[in-house]
Image 1: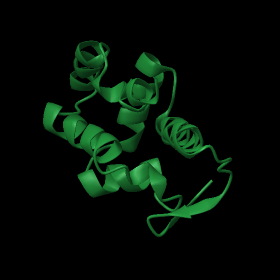
Image 2: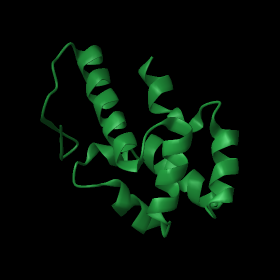
Image 3: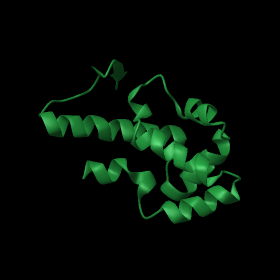
Length: 111
């Protein structure tokens, strides 16, 4: 359940998202890099990393990507990162039978 939820950027919505991203001048490469940072590198685990920081790292227009995500997924960039964080905590709770509310994982405090 959580694997599917955490991979929202790789879901059946990708084609629709990519069309919208192109319309907002976001390249496929930039969008794919954002997806990799979220799904493979799990940058959302570190609470000091926000959506704007990720966009700066990638040289992307945060407002444009935020608009794409909000229109297609119903989450803005920061909301999407928070959703990933909630799902990550829930997956840890399910996997280990613990209630994770605020903890340190891989050196990063998660909430």
